[in-house]
Length: 633
Image 1 (tube, rainbow, N blue to C red):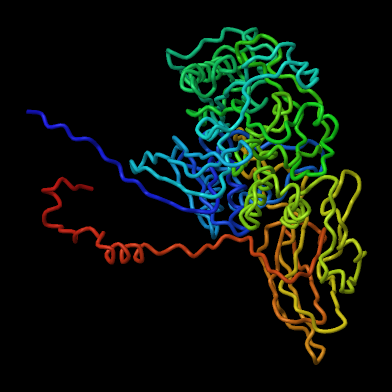
Image 2 (image 1 turned 90 degrees about the vertical axis):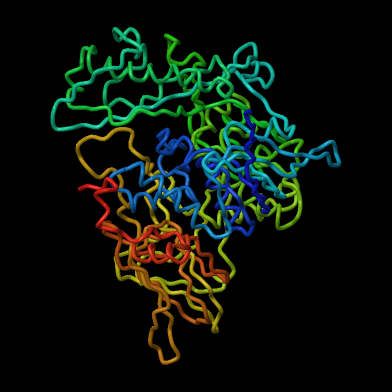
C-alpha cells in the first residue's frame, strides 16, 4: 500500500507599516526613503540579488536625464558614489554587494529575497475604492509562505504584480493617437509593447580568443541581418538583442527567453567568425551572457493623472512635481530584432521635465502607490520615464510620500492636496532635485552671519545646489580656507548639512564591456574627502567638533550637537581636485544620519565560537579516521 503524504509549507506572518514589492532601483530607493522617514518597511524581491535590470543578472546601464549637470541625485547618487568608492574596476558582484548593503543595513527596513508575491487580499472602502489588507508570497529557497500585513503598499515590481490581485486599474499596450492627441502613437491602439532584451558583455584580452557557437545558436550570415544595429565590438551594450513586444512579456516571458538565448549566441558568433571586420574582435572574449532578460514594458497603473507625450514635451510644469525625467522618448519597435527597420525612434523630450505626484498612486486603491516603469503614463510617455535613473528618483519620491501617509494617517491623494509643500521640502532636503522648485535656507542658517576667508560666502545659501550648464554655482576656494557661521548668542545646532561637488556630468554607470585598462569608476576628483568643523570656545580657542578624512558622499551631514556661537568649517582635501567646492551649507536642529549601520565583520574564530554557542559547530576532527572516510589532500 502506498501512503500519500502532502507537503505542508511553513507560514511566516509579518506586520509592517509599508510593504514595497520589487527590489529594482525604484524599489530600493522607495524602501530606503520610507524607512528613513519613520515607517517600518519590508522590501520583497523575487530574485537572489537586488537591482532588477541594473543587477548582475541583467546588467543594463542606469540611464537618466540627458544634458550636462542634469544627473539624478538623492539616494541614487548616494548608492552610485558608494560603488565608485568600493568598486573602481566595475565588478558586478561588488555592485550587487553595494545594493545589498544599502538595504540590509538600513535601520527600520527588513527584506525578503527569492520571494514572489502570488496573491493579495483587498477590501471595499468608501468612495468605490479598494484597500489592500495583506499579501502572500512564496520564498523558493526556504519553501516558506510569507504573509505580510501592512497599512500601505508600494508596487515597484515593474510588472505591476499587485494590479491583477487587488483590482487596481491598469493599462497595457499602445494608446490610439487620438485618445490623448499624441502624434507619436499609432493610429489604432493595440496591446503591443516594447520587448525584452538579453545582454552580453565582452572582455578584451592580450591574445586571440576563438569562439565556437553552440549548434542551436541562430546563424546570422551577413550585416544585412542586422540593419541599423551592428556597431562592432565597442559599439554599445547590445540592447538591441530584443524580442517579445508582439507577445505577452509576462505570460510568455520564458518563451521569449528561449529565443533570446540562441539569438545572443548567434550575434557573438557572427561578430567573431563571419563579420567583415572580425579581425577587430580577435582579442575580445565573451565575458558574460545573461540568462534573465530585462523587461521594458507591460502593465501600467492608472493614477489620478496619466502622464502623456504632450506633458513631457511641455516640460512637465506641474505644481505637484516630485521627480523628473529627461531621457528621449525612446520607443522601440515591438518586433525587436525581427524588424528590419530602425530598432527605436528617439522622439525628442526636454531635459529635465517634471513628473507629477498624481501619477504615482492608484486611482481606485487608496493605499497603493507605485514607482518604476509601471507608473501612470501612456505608452509614449513611458518610452522616456522607464529608464532606471528616472525610476529611482520616482522611487525616492514615493517612499517619502508613503512615510508621510503613515505619519498623517491619510491616503496618498491627501498628501498631494494637503501636504504637498512638505513632501517637496523633504525630497529637496534629501538632495532630490525638483526642477522649478526652490528650497530656502533653514532658519538657523538665516539667523546666522556667514563669512568666508576667501570666495563669495553668499553662494553657500543659494537655492541651486548644482551647476546648470554654463552657469556655475557654489563656493570655491583653496584648501585650508575657512567658512564661519556666527550667531548673536549661543545657539543649539545639531548638525551642518553640506552639499558637495560629485560631478553631475559623470553618469557613474557600470560598464557594458571590459577593455584592457583597469579602473572604470572612481570617486569624483572635486568631491571633498577631508574637512574639519570647529567651535569657538569662551577663551577664543577653537575646538574640533566634527572631522572626517574619508568622505565620498555628495550629501554630508556633520553631526556636532551642543550650543555654539561661532562655527568654522575648513575643507582640507578632495579626491584629486585642486580646489574645495561646496554648493550648500545649512545649520539645522535635527541631525540626519544617512550612513548604514555597519559593524566590523567577525573573525573566523568568532564565527566558530558563535556556531558552537548555537549548537551548530561540527564534531572535532579525527585525523586517525580521515582516510577511511575518504578525505585526501
